[in-house]
Length: 516
Image (cartoon, rainbow, N blue to C red; front, side, top):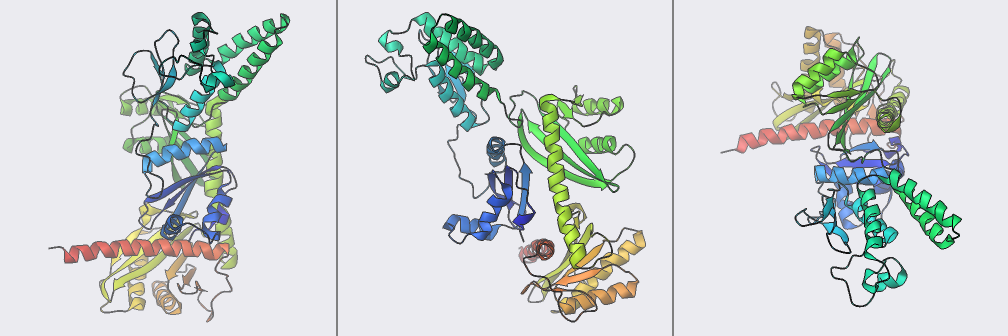
Protein backbone atom coordinates (compact mmCIF):
# COMPACT_ATOMS: atom_id res chain seq x y z
CA UNK A 1 0.00 0.00 0.00
CA UNK A 2 1.52 3.30 -1.12
CA UNK A 3 1.26 6.17 1.37
CA UNK A 4 2.11 9.42 -0.49
CA UNK A 5 1.77 11.48 2.70
CA UNK A 6 5.14 10.14 3.85
CA UNK A 7 6.91 11.69 0.85
CA UNK A 8 8.80 14.98 1.08
CA UNK A 9 7.57 18.16 -0.60
CA UNK A 10 10.95 18.78 -2.29
CA UNK A 11 11.60 18.31 -6.03
CA UNK A 12 12.95 15.00 -7.26
CA UNK A 13 12.20 11.77 -9.10
CA UNK A 14 9.86 8.95 -8.11
CA UNK A 15 10.11 5.34 -9.24
CA UNK A 16 7.07 3.04 -9.27
CA UNK A 17 7.67 -0.72 -9.20
CA UNK A 18 5.36 -3.70 -9.66
CA UNK A 19 4.82 -6.75 -7.43
CA UNK A 20 8.00 -8.33 -8.82
CA UNK A 21 10.08 -5.31 -7.85
CA UNK A 22 10.56 -4.25 -11.48
CA UNK A 23 10.57 -0.49 -12.06
CA UNK A 24 7.61 0.27 -14.33
CA UNK A 25 7.56 4.08 -14.33
CA UNK A 26 9.95 6.94 -13.58
CA UNK A 27 8.61 10.45 -13.13
CA UNK A 28 9.81 13.86 -11.99
CA UNK A 29 8.12 16.36 -9.72
CA UNK A 30 8.48 19.85 -8.36
CA UNK A 31 6.72 18.57 -5.24
CA UNK A 32 7.09 14.80 -4.79
CA UNK A 33 4.25 14.38 -2.30
CA UNK A 34 1.73 16.33 -4.35
CA UNK A 35 2.65 14.66 -7.64
CA UNK A 36 2.57 11.08 -6.36
CA UNK A 37 -0.66 11.74 -4.42
CA UNK A 38 -2.35 12.81 -7.65
CA UNK A 39 -2.09 9.26 -9.04
CA UNK A 40 -4.19 7.87 -6.19
CA UNK A 41 -6.66 10.72 -5.62
CA UNK A 42 -7.86 11.45 -9.17
CA UNK A 43 -10.73 9.58 -10.82
CA UNK A 44 -10.29 10.92 -14.36
CA UNK A 45 -7.09 9.08 -15.25
CA UNK A 46 -6.54 8.04 -18.85
CA UNK A 47 -6.58 4.27 -19.57
CA UNK A 48 -2.79 3.89 -19.65
CA UNK A 49 -2.32 5.72 -16.33
CA UNK A 50 -5.12 3.66 -14.79
CA UNK A 51 -3.29 0.47 -15.77
CA UNK A 52 -0.10 1.91 -14.30
CA UNK A 53 -1.75 2.74 -10.97
CA UNK A 54 -3.29 -0.74 -10.79
CA UNK A 55 0.16 -2.29 -11.24
CA UNK A 56 1.99 -0.16 -8.63
CA UNK A 57 3.23 -2.17 -5.66
CA UNK A 58 6.30 -0.20 -4.58
CA UNK A 59 7.68 3.33 -4.54
CA UNK A 60 11.16 4.82 -4.28
CA UNK A 61 12.36 8.38 -4.73
CA UNK A 62 15.45 10.56 -5.02
CA UNK A 63 15.38 14.17 -3.85
CA UNK A 64 17.12 16.84 -5.94
CA UNK A 65 17.90 20.48 -5.22
CA UNK A 66 15.98 21.89 -8.19
CA UNK A 67 13.25 20.88 -10.62
CA UNK A 68 15.76 21.12 -13.48
CA UNK A 69 17.95 18.53 -11.77
CA UNK A 70 14.87 16.30 -11.53
CA UNK A 71 14.43 16.58 -15.32
CA UNK A 72 18.00 15.48 -15.92
CA UNK A 73 17.86 12.66 -13.38
CA UNK A 74 14.56 11.42 -14.80
CA UNK A 75 16.14 11.12 -18.25
CA UNK A 76 19.06 9.12 -16.84
CA UNK A 77 16.84 6.76 -14.84
CA UNK A 78 14.54 6.09 -17.79
CA UNK A 79 17.52 5.20 -19.97
CA UNK A 80 18.85 2.92 -17.24
CA UNK A 81 15.65 1.07 -16.31
CA UNK A 82 13.56 1.40 -19.51
CA UNK A 83 10.27 1.35 -17.57
CA UNK A 84 7.24 -0.21 -19.22
CA UNK A 85 4.94 2.79 -18.79
CA UNK A 86 7.32 5.54 -19.86
CA UNK A 87 7.26 6.70 -23.48
CA UNK A 88 9.68 4.67 -25.59
CA UNK A 89 11.60 7.13 -27.74
CA UNK A 90 13.50 4.77 -29.99
CA UNK A 91 14.92 7.64 -32.04
CA UNK A 92 16.11 9.51 -28.96
CA UNK A 93 18.94 11.98 -29.60
CA UNK A 94 20.26 11.78 -26.05
CA UNK A 95 23.81 11.06 -27.11
CA UNK A 96 23.94 13.44 -30.08
CA UNK A 97 26.57 16.14 -30.61
CA UNK A 98 26.55 19.81 -31.53
CA UNK A 99 28.38 20.26 -34.82
CA UNK A 100 30.05 23.46 -36.01
CA UNK A 101 30.75 23.08 -39.73
CA UNK A 102 33.96 24.01 -41.52
CA UNK A 103 32.60 26.59 -43.99
CA UNK A 104 33.28 30.26 -44.73
CA UNK A 105 30.17 31.02 -42.66
CA UNK A 106 29.99 27.99 -40.31
CA UNK A 107 26.64 26.42 -39.51
CA UNK A 108 25.66 25.05 -36.08
CA UNK A 109 23.33 22.07 -35.75
CA UNK A 110 22.71 18.67 -34.10
CA UNK A 111 24.70 15.68 -35.37
CA UNK A 112 24.20 12.04 -34.46
CA UNK A 113 27.82 10.99 -34.99
CA UNK A 114 31.11 12.92 -35.37
CA UNK A 115 31.72 11.65 -38.88
CA UNK A 116 32.30 14.82 -40.94
CA UNK A 117 34.49 17.91 -41.04
CA UNK A 118 34.28 20.79 -38.64
CA UNK A 119 34.19 20.49 -34.85
CA UNK A 120 31.96 18.34 -32.63
CA UNK A 121 31.00 19.03 -29.02
CA UNK A 122 29.50 16.40 -26.75
CA UNK A 123 28.00 13.89 -26.63
CA UNK A 124 25.30 15.49 -24.49
CA UNK A 125 23.76 13.23 -21.82
CA UNK A 126 20.53 15.25 -21.91
CA UNK A 127 18.74 15.81 -25.22
CA UNK A 128 16.67 18.56 -23.65
CA UNK A 129 19.75 20.45 -22.45
CA UNK A 130 21.44 20.05 -25.82
CA UNK A 131 18.49 21.51 -27.70
CA UNK A 132 18.12 24.39 -25.22
CA UNK A 133 21.83 25.19 -25.56
CA UNK A 134 21.68 25.00 -29.34
CA UNK A 135 18.68 27.30 -29.44
CA UNK A 136 20.43 29.78 -27.13
CA UNK A 137 23.64 29.87 -29.18
CA UNK A 138 21.75 30.37 -32.45
CA UNK A 139 19.79 33.33 -31.16
CA UNK A 140 22.51 34.79 -28.94
CA UNK A 141 25.17 34.95 -31.64
CA UNK A 142 22.97 34.99 -34.76
CA UNK A 143 24.42 31.82 -36.26
CA UNK A 144 22.98 30.35 -39.45
CA UNK A 145 21.18 26.99 -39.52
CA UNK A 146 20.41 26.68 -43.26
CA UNK A 147 22.20 23.90 -45.17
CA UNK A 148 22.97 26.28 -48.04
CA UNK A 149 23.11 30.05 -48.01
CA UNK A 150 19.82 31.20 -49.57
CA UNK A 151 19.57 33.87 -52.19
CA UNK A 152 17.06 35.82 -50.17
CA UNK A 153 16.96 36.34 -46.40
CA UNK A 154 14.77 33.90 -44.46
CA UNK A 155 12.37 34.54 -41.59
CA UNK A 156 15.15 34.28 -38.97
CA UNK A 157 16.97 37.10 -40.72
CA UNK A 158 13.84 39.27 -40.73
CA UNK A 159 13.16 38.78 -37.00
CA UNK A 160 16.80 39.36 -36.08
CA UNK A 161 17.69 35.88 -34.76
CA UNK A 162 20.27 35.33 -37.54
CA UNK A 163 23.09 37.66 -38.57
CA UNK A 164 22.11 36.79 -42.19
CA UNK A 165 25.45 36.32 -43.97
CA UNK A 166 23.32 35.58 -47.08
CA UNK A 167 22.57 39.32 -47.31
CA UNK A 168 26.19 40.44 -46.98
CA UNK A 169 25.33 42.55 -43.93
CA UNK A 170 28.09 40.86 -41.88
CA UNK A 171 31.68 40.20 -42.90
CA UNK A 172 33.24 36.77 -42.78
CA UNK A 173 35.65 37.90 -40.01
CA UNK A 174 32.84 39.30 -37.85
CA UNK A 175 30.78 36.16 -38.35
CA UNK A 176 33.72 33.94 -37.40
CA UNK A 177 34.14 35.97 -34.19
CA UNK A 178 30.54 35.10 -33.33
CA UNK A 179 31.28 31.43 -34.01
CA UNK A 180 34.40 31.62 -31.85
CA UNK A 181 32.33 32.95 -28.95
CA UNK A 182 29.72 30.24 -29.38
CA UNK A 183 32.46 27.63 -29.33
CA UNK A 184 33.88 29.16 -26.14
CA UNK A 185 30.52 28.35 -24.54
CA UNK A 186 30.61 24.80 -25.91
CA UNK A 187 34.14 24.36 -24.53
CA UNK A 188 32.96 25.49 -21.10
CA UNK A 189 34.85 28.80 -21.00
CA UNK A 190 31.74 30.81 -20.17
CA UNK A 191 33.45 32.84 -17.45
CA UNK A 192 36.21 34.01 -19.80
CA UNK A 193 33.68 34.94 -22.48
CA UNK A 194 31.61 36.91 -19.95
CA UNK A 195 34.71 38.91 -18.97
CA UNK A 196 35.39 39.72 -22.64
CA UNK A 197 31.78 40.78 -23.20
CA UNK A 198 31.78 42.98 -20.09
CA UNK A 199 34.87 44.80 -21.34
CA UNK A 200 33.30 45.23 -24.78
CA UNK A 201 30.03 46.45 -23.23
CA UNK A 202 31.88 49.08 -21.17
CA UNK A 203 33.77 50.24 -24.25
CA UNK A 204 30.53 50.47 -26.29
CA UNK A 205 28.84 52.49 -23.56
CA UNK A 206 31.83 54.84 -23.40
CA UNK A 207 31.55 55.39 -27.17
CA UNK A 208 27.80 55.97 -26.61
CA UNK A 209 26.96 52.93 -28.75
CA UNK A 210 24.08 52.17 -26.42
CA UNK A 211 22.25 49.77 -28.70
CA UNK A 212 25.35 47.59 -28.96
CA UNK A 213 25.93 47.85 -25.18
CA UNK A 214 22.37 46.64 -24.50
CA UNK A 215 22.85 43.73 -26.92
CA UNK A 216 26.01 42.71 -25.05
CA UNK A 217 24.24 43.12 -21.69
CA UNK A 218 21.55 40.67 -22.81
CA UNK A 219 24.19 38.19 -23.98
CA UNK A 220 25.95 38.41 -20.61
CA UNK A 221 22.69 37.80 -18.73
CA UNK A 222 21.91 34.75 -20.87
CA UNK A 223 25.42 33.32 -20.38
CA UNK A 224 25.32 33.85 -16.62
CA UNK A 225 22.08 31.85 -16.50
CA UNK A 226 23.70 29.12 -18.53
CA UNK A 227 26.72 29.03 -16.21
CA UNK A 228 24.48 27.98 -13.31
CA UNK A 229 25.29 24.30 -13.84
CA UNK A 230 23.23 21.55 -12.24
CA UNK A 231 24.76 19.44 -9.45
CA UNK A 232 23.72 16.18 -11.08
CA UNK A 233 24.75 16.95 -14.64
CA UNK A 234 28.41 17.93 -14.56
CA UNK A 235 30.29 16.99 -17.71
CA UNK A 236 32.99 14.62 -16.49
CA UNK A 237 35.05 11.96 -18.18
CA UNK A 238 35.22 9.80 -15.05
CA UNK A 239 32.84 8.14 -12.58
CA UNK A 240 32.30 9.10 -8.95
CA UNK A 241 30.63 7.66 -5.88
CA UNK A 242 29.34 10.03 -3.19
CA UNK A 243 28.85 8.62 0.32
CA UNK A 244 27.19 10.30 3.27
CA UNK A 245 25.47 9.11 6.40
CA UNK A 246 23.77 9.97 9.68
CA UNK A 247 24.38 8.11 12.95
CA UNK A 248 21.38 7.91 15.28
CA UNK A 249 21.00 5.87 18.47
CA UNK A 250 23.82 3.51 17.57
CA UNK A 251 22.63 2.91 13.99
CA UNK A 252 24.29 4.15 10.79
CA UNK A 253 21.97 5.30 7.99
CA UNK A 254 24.08 5.54 4.85
CA UNK A 255 23.47 6.35 1.19
CA UNK A 256 25.79 5.98 -1.76
CA UNK A 257 25.10 7.87 -4.98
CA UNK A 258 26.60 6.56 -8.22
CA UNK A 259 27.58 9.34 -10.64
CA UNK A 260 28.28 8.15 -14.19
CA UNK A 261 30.48 10.68 -16.04
CA UNK A 262 28.81 13.61 -14.32
CA UNK A 263 25.24 12.31 -14.30
CA UNK A 264 23.55 10.91 -11.22
CA UNK A 265 22.66 7.33 -12.14
CA UNK A 266 21.14 5.94 -8.95
CA UNK A 267 21.43 5.42 -5.21
CA UNK A 268 22.01 2.61 -2.74
CA UNK A 269 20.84 2.56 0.88
CA UNK A 270 22.37 0.75 3.87
CA UNK A 271 21.59 0.48 7.57
CA UNK A 272 23.94 -1.15 10.07
CA UNK A 273 25.17 -0.92 13.67
CA UNK A 274 27.64 1.80 14.55
CA UNK A 275 31.09 0.46 15.32
CA UNK A 276 34.53 2.01 15.49
CA UNK A 277 35.79 2.59 11.96
CA UNK A 278 32.42 1.69 10.41
CA UNK A 279 32.92 3.91 7.33
CA UNK A 280 36.21 2.28 6.39
CA UNK A 281 34.77 -1.19 7.01
CA UNK A 282 31.79 -0.33 4.79
CA UNK A 283 34.02 0.89 1.96
CA UNK A 284 36.18 -2.24 2.08
CA UNK A 285 33.18 -4.58 2.02
CA UNK A 286 31.19 -2.62 -0.57
CA UNK A 287 34.03 -2.28 -3.08
CA UNK A 288 34.96 -5.93 -2.69
CA UNK A 289 31.77 -6.55 -4.76
CA UNK A 290 31.68 -3.35 -6.85
CA UNK A 291 34.45 -1.87 -8.97
CA UNK A 292 35.67 1.37 -7.38
CA UNK A 293 35.26 4.52 -9.51
CA UNK A 294 38.01 7.01 -10.21
CA UNK A 295 36.80 9.24 -7.39
CA UNK A 296 35.03 8.68 -4.06
CA UNK A 297 33.60 11.72 -2.25
CA UNK A 298 33.29 11.32 1.54
CA UNK A 299 32.25 13.52 4.48
CA UNK A 300 35.32 12.60 6.58
CA UNK A 301 38.89 11.45 5.83
CA UNK A 302 39.75 7.73 5.84
CA UNK A 303 42.93 5.82 6.48
CA UNK A 304 45.45 5.95 3.63
CA UNK A 305 45.61 2.15 3.67
CA UNK A 306 41.92 1.93 2.76
CA UNK A 307 42.37 4.41 -0.09
CA UNK A 308 45.31 2.33 -1.28
CA UNK A 309 43.21 -0.82 -1.10
CA UNK A 310 40.53 0.79 -3.31
CA UNK A 311 43.21 1.72 -5.85
CA UNK A 312 44.47 -1.86 -5.75
CA UNK A 313 40.96 -3.20 -6.41
CA UNK A 314 40.48 -0.85 -9.33
CA UNK A 315 43.90 -1.40 -10.81
CA UNK A 316 44.42 2.36 -10.98
CA UNK A 317 44.40 5.45 -8.78
CA UNK A 318 41.22 6.13 -6.78
CA UNK A 319 40.98 9.71 -5.52
CA UNK A 320 39.35 10.04 -2.11
CA UNK A 321 38.00 13.59 -1.71
CA UNK A 322 36.62 15.29 1.42
CA UNK A 323 35.31 18.63 0.06
CA UNK A 324 34.80 21.62 2.34
CA UNK A 325 33.12 23.90 -0.20
CA UNK A 326 32.07 24.17 -3.81
CA UNK A 327 30.35 21.82 -6.20
CA UNK A 328 31.41 18.53 -4.60
CA UNK A 329 30.41 19.74 -1.14
CA UNK A 330 26.99 20.56 -2.57
CA UNK A 331 26.73 17.01 -3.87
CA UNK A 332 27.69 15.64 -0.47
CA UNK A 333 25.00 17.79 1.14
CA UNK A 334 22.46 16.53 -1.40
CA UNK A 335 23.20 12.92 -0.39
CA UNK A 336 22.81 13.81 3.29
CA UNK A 337 19.51 15.48 2.49
CA UNK A 338 18.34 12.23 0.91
CA UNK A 339 19.47 10.32 3.99
CA UNK A 340 17.44 12.62 6.23
CA UNK A 341 14.31 12.35 4.12
CA UNK A 342 14.69 8.73 3.00
CA UNK A 343 15.40 7.21 6.41
CA UNK A 344 14.03 9.62 8.96
CA UNK A 345 10.88 10.28 6.96
CA UNK A 346 10.13 6.62 7.78
CA UNK A 347 10.72 7.35 11.46
CA UNK A 348 7.30 9.06 11.46
CA UNK A 349 5.67 5.77 10.41
CA UNK A 350 7.47 3.89 13.18
CA UNK A 351 6.52 6.44 15.82
CA UNK A 352 2.90 6.33 14.71
CA UNK A 353 2.85 2.51 14.73
CA UNK A 354 4.35 2.42 18.22
CA UNK A 355 1.69 4.83 19.46
CA UNK A 356 -1.33 3.19 17.81
CA UNK A 357 -0.34 -0.39 18.75
CA UNK A 358 0.81 0.66 22.25
CA UNK A 359 4.19 -0.98 21.73
CA UNK A 360 6.86 -0.79 24.46
CA UNK A 361 9.65 0.05 22.00
CA UNK A 362 10.01 1.61 18.57
CA UNK A 363 9.34 -1.18 16.00
CA UNK A 364 12.70 -0.82 14.24
CA UNK A 365 12.65 -4.46 13.05
CA UNK A 366 9.35 -5.94 11.91
CA UNK A 367 8.85 -9.47 10.55
CA UNK A 368 5.67 -10.42 8.70
CA UNK A 369 4.41 -13.91 7.74
CA UNK A 370 2.06 -14.97 4.94
CA UNK A 371 0.82 -18.30 3.54
CA UNK A 372 0.12 -19.02 -0.13
CA UNK A 373 -1.38 -22.09 -1.81
CA UNK A 374 -3.60 -23.19 -4.66
CA UNK A 375 -6.54 -25.25 -3.35
CA UNK A 376 -4.32 -26.63 -0.62
CA UNK A 377 -1.49 -27.71 -2.94
CA UNK A 378 2.09 -26.43 -3.04
CA UNK A 379 1.53 -24.61 0.24
CA UNK A 380 4.36 -22.20 1.07
CA UNK A 381 5.11 -19.58 3.68
CA UNK A 382 7.00 -16.30 3.43
CA UNK A 383 8.59 -13.98 5.92
CA UNK A 384 9.66 -10.46 5.04
CA UNK A 385 11.64 -8.19 7.32
CA UNK A 386 11.42 -4.39 7.49
CA UNK A 387 14.22 -2.45 9.15
CA UNK A 388 13.71 1.20 10.02
CA UNK A 389 10.61 1.29 7.84
CA UNK A 390 12.24 -0.18 4.72
CA UNK A 391 12.39 -3.71 3.26
CA UNK A 392 15.46 -5.62 4.47
CA UNK A 393 15.48 -8.07 1.55
CA UNK A 394 18.69 -9.83 2.56
CA UNK A 395 16.82 -11.22 5.56
CA UNK A 396 13.67 -12.42 3.77
CA UNK A 397 12.88 -16.12 4.30
CA UNK A 398 10.82 -18.70 2.38
CA UNK A 399 9.27 -21.87 3.83
CA UNK A 400 7.97 -24.96 2.12
CA UNK A 401 5.24 -26.29 4.40
CA UNK A 402 6.18 -29.75 5.69
CA UNK A 403 3.69 -30.80 8.37
CA UNK A 404 0.33 -29.61 7.03
CA UNK A 405 -1.89 -31.49 4.61
CA UNK A 406 -4.89 -29.94 2.87
CA UNK A 407 -6.07 -26.37 3.51
CA UNK A 408 -5.16 -25.26 7.02
CA UNK A 409 -3.77 -21.73 7.14
CA UNK A 410 -3.74 -21.74 10.95
CA UNK A 411 -1.49 -24.81 11.14
CA UNK A 412 0.70 -23.47 8.32
CA UNK A 413 1.22 -20.15 10.15
CA UNK A 414 2.06 -22.08 13.32
CA UNK A 415 4.66 -24.14 11.45
CA UNK A 416 6.55 -21.22 9.88
CA UNK A 417 6.49 -19.16 13.09
CA UNK A 418 7.82 -22.14 15.05
CA UNK A 419 10.56 -22.84 12.51
CA UNK A 420 11.64 -19.21 12.35
CA UNK A 421 11.86 -18.46 16.06
CA UNK A 422 13.03 -21.82 17.34
CA UNK A 423 15.97 -21.42 14.98
CA UNK A 424 16.64 -17.88 16.22
CA UNK A 425 16.59 -19.21 19.78
CA UNK A 426 19.04 -21.96 18.89
CA UNK A 427 21.42 -19.62 17.03
CA UNK A 428 21.15 -16.75 19.50
CA UNK A 429 19.80 -14.38 16.83
CA UNK A 430 18.06 -11.07 17.43
CA UNK A 431 14.27 -11.12 17.62
CA UNK A 432 12.19 -8.44 15.90
CA UNK A 433 10.43 -5.62 17.72
CA UNK A 434 7.09 -6.63 16.19
CA UNK A 435 5.70 -9.76 14.51
CA UNK A 436 2.93 -9.25 11.97
CA UNK A 437 0.66 -12.00 10.67
CA UNK A 438 -1.32 -11.81 7.42
CA UNK A 439 -4.76 -12.91 8.58
CA UNK A 440 -7.39 -12.49 11.24
CA UNK A 441 -8.00 -13.69 14.79
CA UNK A 442 -7.50 -17.38 13.91
CA UNK A 443 -4.07 -16.92 12.36
CA UNK A 444 -3.08 -14.60 15.22
CA UNK A 445 -4.12 -17.16 17.84
CA UNK A 446 -2.09 -19.88 16.11
CA UNK A 447 1.05 -17.72 16.11
CA UNK A 448 0.56 -16.57 19.73
CA UNK A 449 0.27 -20.20 20.88
CA UNK A 450 3.64 -21.02 19.27
CA UNK A 451 5.35 -18.01 20.86
CA UNK A 452 4.04 -19.05 24.30
CA UNK A 453 5.21 -22.58 23.69
CA UNK A 454 8.71 -21.30 22.89
CA UNK A 455 8.69 -18.81 25.77
CA UNK A 456 9.18 -15.86 23.44
CA UNK A 457 7.78 -12.46 24.41
CA UNK A 458 7.61 -10.28 21.30
CA UNK A 459 4.68 -7.96 20.44
CA UNK A 460 2.50 -9.46 17.73
CA UNK A 461 -0.43 -8.30 15.60
CA UNK A 462 -2.44 -9.51 12.62
CA UNK A 463 -3.98 -7.62 9.72
CA UNK A 464 -6.97 -9.03 7.83
CA UNK A 465 -7.23 -8.28 4.12
CA UNK A 466 -10.92 -7.57 3.57
CA UNK A 467 -11.42 -4.57 5.86
CA UNK A 468 -7.74 -4.06 6.78
CA UNK A 469 -8.66 -4.77 10.41
CA UNK A 470 -5.82 -5.02 12.90
CA UNK A 471 -6.00 -7.53 15.77
CA UNK A 472 -3.75 -7.88 18.82
CA UNK A 473 -3.78 -10.54 21.57
CA UNK A 474 -6.23 -10.03 24.42
CA UNK A 475 -8.82 -8.11 22.39
CA UNK A 476 -11.77 -9.79 20.68
CA UNK A 477 -12.43 -6.78 18.46
CA UNK A 478 -10.04 -5.09 16.01
CA UNK A 479 -8.16 -1.99 17.08
CA UNK A 480 -9.85 1.33 16.21
CA UNK A 481 -7.51 2.06 13.29
CA UNK A 482 -8.84 3.75 10.19
CA UNK A 483 -7.55 2.01 7.06
CA UNK A 484 -6.07 5.28 5.73
CA UNK A 485 -4.16 6.15 8.91
CA UNK A 486 -0.36 6.17 8.67
CA UNK A 487 -0.02 3.19 11.01
CA UNK A 488 -2.57 1.12 9.07
CA UNK A 489 -1.07 2.03 5.71
CA UNK A 490 2.37 0.99 6.95
CA UNK A 491 1.04 -2.38 8.12
CA UNK A 492 -0.68 -2.85 4.75
CA UNK A 493 2.60 -2.07 2.97
CA UNK A 494 4.43 -4.74 4.98
CA UNK A 495 1.63 -7.29 4.54
CA UNK A 496 1.46 -6.68 0.78
CA UNK A 497 5.21 -7.25 0.49
CA UNK A 498 4.93 -10.55 2.39
CA UNK A 499 2.07 -11.60 0.11
CA UNK A 500 4.07 -10.70 -3.00
CA UNK A 501 7.05 -12.67 -1.76
CA UNK A 502 4.90 -15.73 -0.95
CA UNK A 503 3.15 -15.64 -4.32
CA UNK A 504 6.51 -15.43 -6.13
CA UNK A 505 7.79 -18.53 -4.30
CA UNK A 506 4.53 -20.37 -4.87
CA UNK A 507 4.66 -19.73 -8.62
CA UNK A 508 8.27 -20.95 -8.73
CA UNK A 509 7.29 -24.24 -7.10
CA UNK A 510 4.29 -24.70 -9.40
CA UNK A 511 6.50 -24.22 -12.47
CA UNK A 512 8.87 -26.90 -11.19
CA UNK A 513 5.92 -29.22 -10.57
CA UNK A 514 4.44 -28.92 -14.07
CA UNK A 515 7.79 -28.84 -15.89
CA UNK A 516 8.23 -31.78 -18.30
